[in-house]
Amino acid sequence: MSSHHDDHHDDHHHAPDGRGRALRLGVGGPVGSGKTALVAALCRTLGASLSLGVVTNDIYTTEDADFLRGAGVLDEERILAVETGCCPHTAIRDDIAANLDAVETLEHRFGPLDVVIVESGGDNLTATFSRGLADRQIFVLDVSGGDKVPRKGGPGVTAADLLVVNKTDLASMVGADLGVMARDAAAVRGERPVLFTSIRQDPEAGDVAGWVAEQVRAWSHAHPAALS
Image (cartoon, rainbow, N blue to C red; front, side):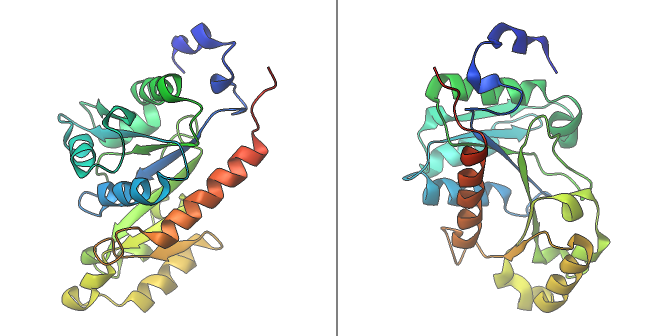
């Protein structure tokens, strides 16, 4: 962990046990699976009831942050971009300092926040977030990769707190069997939840937003703000 934490040891946002700080939600998945569209949907749906911040990751651009700002789903200043300059999983799992800096910048500027969403750059099925960066993780697949993808497993698919299978509206076009995907996902994930969605058909991503809202409620109950 980077040494900048020492500068803020009295700030409850930085308490090691999470007391008083926002839930940090990682959103990962392959390129084109719909991560940015999902983040936009969550901001659109939850922005009226929760105080949000977003950190996006791209290798050499700020494209995802620019998309979110252009979509108008959140105040532009609440969206920060990290240019990783390396494989996406490195910045969310191995060297998380730049992302932590961005998260903490948002918390200082706009806190107290309820949730900060950290969107990974597009990566493969092995991508997971360090628990030092994300308290909860969503992994996004899409059906255009074929119905065999969930049974391939990988840490992203098997270990994420929520697996989202997106673009269900394309299933018939690509010959993907959603029933097979649901069965295989359950086989590799056990009791961990799986949600099927189409952001195109449900721009509010209602089921996913409901799950996120419940995680925020549970987090704030378990990590109340320190008494001043």
